[in-house]
Each structure stands twice: as structure tokens, then as C-alpha cells.
Image (cartoon, helix red, strand yellow):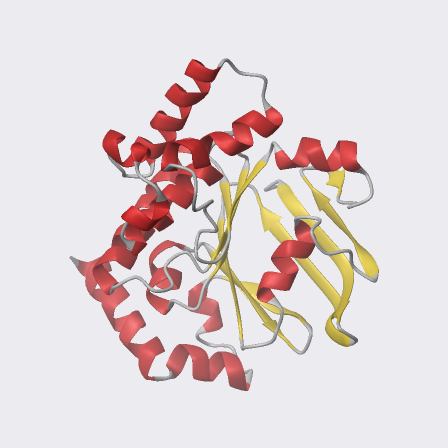
Length: 260
């Protein structure tokens, strides 16, 4: 039986008086790339931030790697933060730090490493993310959009995480850059063995890299299944999402790649 690394049960969240999630259940399996999709306002980023302990739910329970997520339990949260890496929307890099210094931030927060060793490890993560050594000396404003995404991914990998959370990692990238990022993510996940929690609107990404997809609708996870099953699902939003013009184009492109 496949191990569950994230378990969410009966989640209820409210922000600004608005109920975002109600009775939401979700399981994420070890080693998979799980895509998270849903219409605008369904709370995809809110769900991620709640799992990370950045938002306290009104009801429900969350376990990550067998430990209960509780924003008030700082000891447990620090232990969990060492087990996951996060790429927020737009990368969220520190603008005044170099790429190398950005990647070193989690190491300095959670590990007691000599400065030289931290720098060497940061350089390794930068190269793993597909950047060059000299890119580590640049500040974020000197990088292209795709390079900033890779730098943020390098920081997410800083602590050799068991789980990597990605929020719209290919947003704003051109098709070539997005496809390159997808390939990089898939290769890293396979070779390093981490689980991926991936929020994305990019249908090409969903077809290219995900093992399963969780659909947020009606304030909960409506269904979690491989993409082939979702294409046959009768829910109106799911049907339109995967059978609209962009969905058909992404499907056809994925079939071409599979046959080549």
C-alpha cells in the first residue's frame, strides 16, 4: 500500500468572514506529483498555506509525514519545515540577496553549517535547478523570469526536502520555458525521490508531469484521480476544463509526445 505523506481531514477554513473550504479531505501519496486545480476563488493557495501551517483552520486535522500540523506548536513546525521546500507564486526571492544567499536562507535558519559549506551546498542546488555557477552571484532583478523560477526552486531544494510545494511555478513563462521547467521538475522528483504538491492552471504541465490531480470545487476536493479519469468525469467544471479548447490542445500535444 502506498504511503500517505499528507493527510487532510474535515478541513474548514475562513478568511475575512468568507468560508473557503468545508469538509475538505485530501491524501497525497509518497513520491507522486499531485496537481491541484480549481476555478478562481476555490482556495488552492489557501489550502497549501494551511497545510504549511501559515493559516490556522477553523476545523479539521492535517498530518504531514505522520506529524500533526499545528501553527501553535513551534517545535513540531520547525521539524516539519526542515522536511519540505516551498516555491511561492512569483518565486518570492529576497531582492537584496544574491541567488546563492537566497538558497542559503533555509540552511542558516535550520542547520548549523560552516559558511563555506553552506555556500558549496547552495551552489550545488543552483546547478541542480539548471542554473550556472555564475548565476549564484546575481541578484533576482538580473535574472529572467525563467531563471528566477529556477532560483526559487533551488531554494526550495535547499534542505533536501521530502515534499516540495509549488504554487503556479510556470505562470508567466513562455511555452518553451514552461516545458523546460516541467521536464526539470519531473527529473528532479524522480531522481531525488521527493513528493510534489503542485498548484497550476497550466494544462500542458498537468498532462506532462502529474500522476494524479485533485480538483477543488464546492469548497472541497471533489475528486482526486489520474488525468485520464478526470477527462471522463461528468462534473460541469471538470468537463469544461479538460474538454475546452485549451484542454483539447494540451491533450493532443501530450498524445503526440507519447507517440514520438
